[in-house]
Length: 208
Image (cartoon, rainbow, N blue to C red; front, side, top):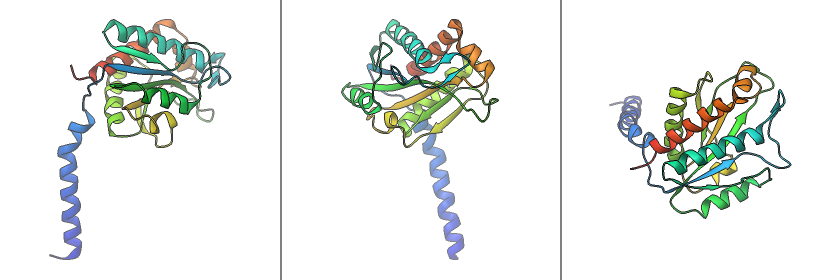
């Protein structure tokens, strides 16, 4: 067998192995008793602002709704902030790392000032455990939150994902630069639908 054939056979076997092993890891469930809920930005950091809608306020509103939904299901919660206060990114990660048997969910709203047509929710993750939760959240959004395009995004430099030891995901709940997304996210009923989807995705990620 030539070297070229050997290389092709090797990569074919690797691809076959990945095909058999990936689904189990990507759709894994975890044992956790607590969810650390991180409302993005806050205080002197407003996040993105478009059409008079301020990310830090929307994020905190959704975070509180997620907390209410999880507690109703018997899941303990820890909030990185409960008011309009500024919390450093590394502080958020350190707080999460002090909570045993937990996962970390950070809540944000997106913006792209160069492409106002860009829309939809995005699930950002760091490692394979985060990806597994991101997939569950993505499926929950697909069922009940109609924002348009959805996608999974690997982020290796986000402090709250990279430095959090527990499985972690950051949810971008829609593009405030997109007029339709922005208008929807301003509605209490829509933010409740977002919170319900996040709760459903978290519950689907948990071993019962």
